[in-house]
Image 1 (spheres, rainbow, N blue to C red):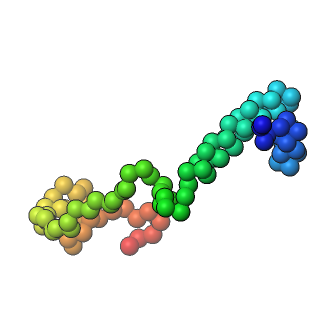
Image 2 (cartoon, helix red, strand yellow; image 1 turned 90 degrees about the horizontal axis):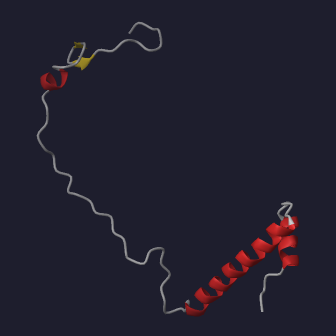
Image 3 (tube, helix red, strand yellow; image 1 turned 120 degrees about the vertical axis):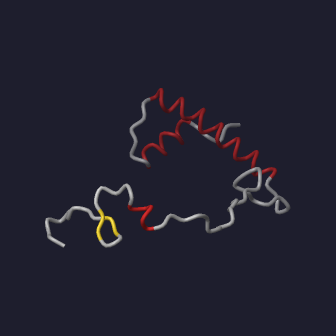
Amino acid sequence: MSEITPDLVRHLGVLARIQLSDEEVERLTGQLDVIVDNIAKVSEVATPEVAATSHPIPLENIFRPDVVGDQLTPAEVLQNAPDAADGRFRVTAILGEEQ
């Protein structure tokens, strides 16, 4: 016997302050009944011996080693810069102030 009845769906709609038409009540009654049945099936197999998981396959973070590679010299970094001064990128002031 179904645990979800149209009266229960209407009551839930009132609690949620959602106005439901008769067609919506009928559709939601069936959908909620399927959801409750599926939860009951999961509850049957969920035992203390079965560990709770969020994924069926264990996940691991894969990190590469942090190895310092070839680095550019300051001259190489600045060679294509539109403007440079004192070994730094030179940019226009964005706050309207002279720097």
